[in-house]
Image (cartoon, rainbow, N blue to C red; front, side, top):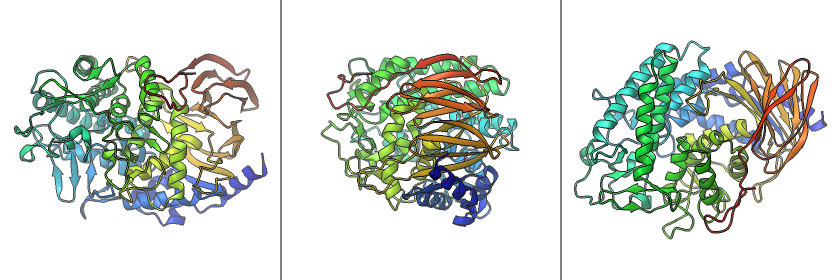
Length: 577
C-alpha cells in the first residue's frame, strides 16, 4: 500500500464522521450513523465539499408541519416535494443515506392521493396540488428499489409495499381514463408542468398548468393540445413494468401488467418515434410532430425503453455528440445545434443549460444498458465544477461549468453524493434485473475505482487519494484509492485490491461476482481477494462474470456493450469503437 493510501485510511478512521463534524440531526444523522458512512481525502476540496453536501442535504430534510415526519424537499426555489424528482429518483438515492426520510417521502404522495386515484404533483406545507401530473422518473421503480435495499429493516415491510402497489394501480387507472382522450394509448400532456418543464421551446404557446387547476382538463383555446407525450408515455410504460415486478414480489400475477406495458410501448413507437431521426417527439392534436430535440430523449431511455440497438444509436447520434446534447459539463436540455438553445445557466435549465436533475436521472439510462464508461466520462467535469463551487445549484453552464440558477437544490446535492459512491466509493445496489422476464436477484455492492485524482481544468487542485466507508449487509467496508490502485477492507481486514479503471461487483457477503471496465481505455491488472488473484484486461464497458471459490477463481462469461467517445461531427457520423 502506498504512503498516500495509508495516510488517507488513517484520516478516515480517525475522523469524527459527518454527524458530529457537521452537526447533523434527525433522520439524516440516524441513517448516516447506522450505515457508518464517512469520507476522507488528501489534497483538493472534495472532502470539504462532501461534508458541505451533507449539511445542505440536512436543510432539505424537514417536516412539512409540526406534527409530520421529516421528508425530502426539492430545495432551490421549491418549498415542497415534487413527484418528478423529490418523490421518485431523489428519494431513491436518498435511501442510501437516510432510508427513513426516503420512506416518508415516497409515502407522502400516496398518503395524499385523491379519492379518484390522482396522485399530487406536489406536496408542500400548504397541502397537495393536483394541478398537473409533474412526471419525470417512474414512482414504482423508486418504490421497489427502496424496498429491496431496505427489506431487512423494520421499514419498508410487505404491507407498505402492498399499500403502495394498490395506490399506484389506482393512479394507472386514472391516467388511462383522463389522459387518453385521443384514444391512441399514448399518455397525453395537457400543460408544460405535466412533464416539469419551464420555458422550454418544446412547450412554447402551451400553458404551464392544466385548465382550471384540474389535471383532467386542458385549455381548449390552445390549438395544439393535447400532445401525445413520449416521456409521459415512457414513464407510464416503465411504471407498469415495475408494478408487474411488485405484483410478483407480493404474490400476485404480473401478467396483466405485461399487456398494459406492451400497449404503452406500442403507442410510444407508433405515435412519438421518428425512425428517420431516431428521436422521440410530441405529436400535437393536428397530427404534427413537435420537432424540438430536447432532453425528452434522455427521459425516455431512462425509462428503460427500447433495446440495445436503439440505445447504441441514441448514444452515438445524440447523447455523446457535442453537436447535439453533450456539452463539456453534462447533457443539455435542448440540442446544441437548435437555434432556440439558450445555454445561459442563470435562466431556467429548460432553456438549454445542464440540469442537475437530468444528470441525476442519467444513470437510469446508461447503467441499465451497461454504458458506465461513458457515464463516468461525462460526469467527471461536472463533479470537478461542483467541487470548486460554493453552491449546489439547479443548473450549470454547459460550456464553463459555472453554477446557474438555484441553491441548496436537493437533486444537485444528491447527484454529488451519488457520483462519489458511483465512481469512487461503495454503492449498495438492489439486485433488480435488467429484464422483468427474469426473477430479480439478490442485493449486492459495487466498488469502483475512478478516484478524482486528475484535475479538471480551471477547477482547482485534484485529490491525491480518497477513502470511503459504509456498512451494508452487516459488514463494514472501507475503500481507499489513489491514481493507480484501489484497496478495500471488510471489517478491518483487506478485502479487495484492483487497478484504477475497474468496478468490482460483489454479492451481499462481499464475494466478487463481476468486474467491469469503467475507464475509457483498456485497463489490465489483477483482482485480489482472499489470498487468490485473477489477471484481467477490461475494455471500456466490458463485463466479466466471475466465480470466486476458495480453490480457483474463474471467468464464467464476458460481455461488452461497446464504447462511444465524445463525437464532434454531425449527428449520425459517430463511430463506436
